[in-house]
Structures are given as C-alpha cells and as structure tokens.
Amino acid sequence: MTLIELKQVTKEYPLKLRRGKTKKKVAVHNVSLAISKGESVALVGESGSGKSTIAKLIMRTEKLTSGLILWKGQNIHSKKVSDYSFFKNIQLVLQDSSSSLHPNMKVKEILAEPIRNFFPDEKNWQEQCMKLLHLVGLDASFLEHYSNQLSGGQKQRLCIAKALAVKPELIIFDESIASLDGESKKGIIEVLKMVQRQDGLTYLFITHDLEFTKELCDFVAVMYQGEIVEYLANWEDEQLTHPYTRILFSTMNAFIP
Ligand SMILES: Nc1ncnc2c1ncn2[C@@H]1O[C@H](COP(=O)(O)OP(=O)(O)OP(=O)(O)O)[C@@H](O)[C@H]1O
Image: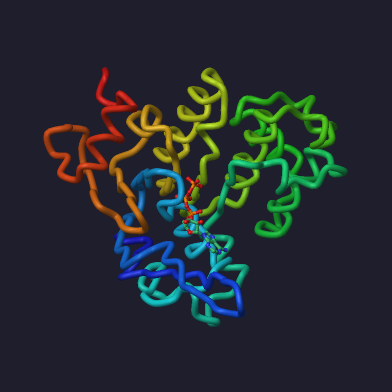
C-alpha cells in the first residue's frame, strides 16, 4: 500500500534582489516519489539539493508551488486534514534536537506530552516513558533529568523516543541519525529495525551518511539541484546512471562491504 506519494512537486522561494526586484529560487523541481508502508527510503544528495525542503513540504511547514502530496490518497495540504491526525500519522526528527526540546522540562514530561495527547486513556504513562527510554538506550534515571542536562547524543535519542511515543506510521529523520556517534548510531539502527519489524513503521531518512543508509534502507533516492536524478532499489553500483551519483557513491565508499 502506498503511504505517501509526491506527485510532480515543485517548490520555489522568492528571493529579494536590490531595488525591490525579486527572483525565484527553485529548491525542488518536479519531484515524484512514492513510499509504501513498511519501507525505508533514503533521500541523499549534496548540500542545497532540496532534501530538507522535501521534509518541510511533507510536514506542511512550507507550501507547495505546484504538485501534490498524498497521504493514503488524500491531499495532506488540504484543510480537511487536521493537525491532530496529521501528527498522529507523521513525525519528524530533526538534526538539531536541542531546538525542539524545552530546556526546563524534565525528560518524563517531554515523553508524557505525546502520550497524553494521542493516547489520553493510557493510565500507565510513566511505564510507557520508561519503555521508550529503554528502547533508545537511556535508563530510567534520565526521567528526572531536565533536557538541558543531556548531551547532544542523549537529546537526539530522546527526540527519537518522543517520535516513537506517538506510534506514527511514518517517521522522517532529517540528518538525525548521522549526527550520533558510532555506538549510539548502531544501537538506534537496531532499535529502528526492530520497531519497523514489530509495527510496520515506514521511514524516510534525509542524510549525507550513505554507510548507515546501506544498513537500513530498501531504496535510495538521489537528489541533485532540486531533482531526483536516481532511484536505487539495490546496492549494485553498475546501475548508477547519473554522473553525480557515481561521484557521491565513490567518494563515500558506500559499496565497501
Ligand atoms: N526560505 C528559503 N528562501 C530561499 N531559499 C531557500 C529557502 N530555504 C531553502 N532555500 C534554498 O533552497 C535550496 C534547497 O535547500 P534545502 O535546505 O532543501 O537543501 P538540502 O539538500 O536539505 O541541504 P543541506 O543538506 O545542506 O541541509 C538551497 O539552495 C537553499 O538555499
């Protein structure tokens, strides 16, 4: 079943020039992409190629210039899709986790918030918080910590736990795994794989890190100058057709076993 589908999506930003003139910056051009339930898709590409803009368009923080984004066939930019059902279905984990965590909230309050919002009948929310923390490799003692007492990597894991707390169908990770250190990254990859097997979750990873992409993703979409120039369903480098993809994959040694 197709969960989310981008159909000929284009995003232009107006750029102000001198003397009141404006110019259009095309951040994303004519992008089509379909992700089915249970898949893991990576969106890779050089800086400025339009990856985060795709995430913003899916998360409705930016408006489309043209095209359509469908969630199970329904236009997600339509006013008919409430914020509640939208965020119940799709969660975003950003690279800069500290900006999305309230510094004066305790970890248990941060995790309880989505549980209370989306599962108001849940009586054992404290137990749920502990389970989520455990899942992302943090022990129960962290429940009483304030978020500003956590390290960058711990905050990142807390943000992943917060997204998992909602039990969404799709999680978008915008450079949020690549920034973890080696051991944390391995641990989180295992957790995400396990949750995906259990709950049939779907992931979209926006990343520069092809090594972990290889570990976790079924498909790789390569962006270059606002367009998807390559869509790979396996890791055979003979299949690479676009010159940029060949450079990207060779410099990152993605095919070294
Ligand atoms: N609000 C904006 N106004 C004007 N241009 C923008 C705006 N946001 C993004 N852009 C431009 O759109 C293009 C795509 O940006 P985007 O952030 O999507 O790239 P990216 O692939 O995610 O890059 P990175 O990997 O560095 O995060 C860039 O050229 C960027 O400068």
